[in-house]
Image (cartoon, rainbow, N blue to C red; front, top):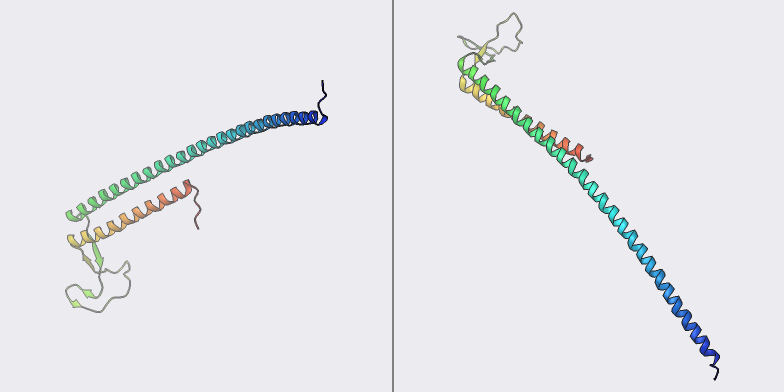
Length: 174
């Protein structure tokens, strides 16, 4: 038999070494990719769990805030109902004569016509002239006062709702 040239044995050895190195490098690459996939899956699972928990907390805060806003709305409705009842009772008493409304007057003396304006405050010993309001005037003044009271109640409810939402969601305002 003829002996193979030495360079062929060297080439076959180098080729076998390259194939073996290539195979080992592929195994390492596959192991690194599998490890990277496991790490990514774990991170994704952790992020998904954190998202679910955060969403749950937000929904809980939203439900609590909605419940408190509903309670505030119910309170406003109840306050408005009580105010309307009081207003109706007051106006019924005015119409029946149980309550008489009057305003102080100055500058006129009953029965004598116009006179000098009395700028001195009324004290306990003096009788101050008063003019009694008619039913229509009393109703008009009561309507104005009632509208103002209703607006104040509504604005206070808005302020309460604003503060509730701000505090519930920890919003910082300037």
